[in-house]
Length: 373
Ligand SMILES: [Mn+2]
Image: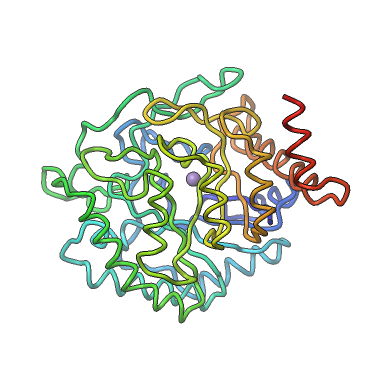
């Protein structure tokens, strides 16, 4: 396993690459979508939160795709800083809203998605993460309920009532001039049909381009949010996604925290099942307390998930991909995001070193952890 750091668009600068290396990372995962663009309630020194139903921000330019030169330059800058660019995380709603919505621009946007995948391949970036969701990450509250009164996000009960307004998808605004009204609700099967069509359209291009597509599960993993169905809201639903279009390029951006929030199954079984199949392109690591619709995100060393057990399973199944911290609660200092990331990375590096130590097999780790409780 390799350790990386996820960087938002405004963090794609040498200062942040140096920070990643200083904190022990060899890899980075980058976001090219500026989630924070004109978002009134969405501070840039945290994960994109929005308010419970406020959008994160305004999507990018629909006519401006990420170009090969731009991607190559980014990869070169990251390599010059001594790091490897492991993945791009998320498509811009400006480029694929009608793929999600089955709207009138669907066929043109499928061509845009194919072009993007070809460019990513040409720039030798091996993975593109995505989240096939209409409502996106929403319905959460930010409260000082973390350890030591840390600001953290979670759900304080069901949040299903406010429909998604027209012109918005995946919690971002793609059309500021959309007519009044809201998205009509669709069925769970219709959402799966849209995903199936998308994968059938783009996976052959991904294969030709040497790019793995990696699906994030729905966060928060409710059966529906804002009247819209969710795709992967229980651990076993990831299998349906993998099986829908069998390909090495149809893979997962497995999010441990989101899976731990799910009401069915077991996060250890899920990590075992999907890493054993070699389907995890890269992994988000985060701890959590509770399950939907009552949970909160926690620091890595507390919460419901035994992280040493998760990392032991990955090591046992020879997971060779990149692990990045997901979100962390905000630490009380002038650099809350940096502090949260450094704390999480230190924890991950310590467990990794322990698992790799020749004096300390996975079995011994599991046993000593158990005895320590
Ligand atoms: Mn995640």
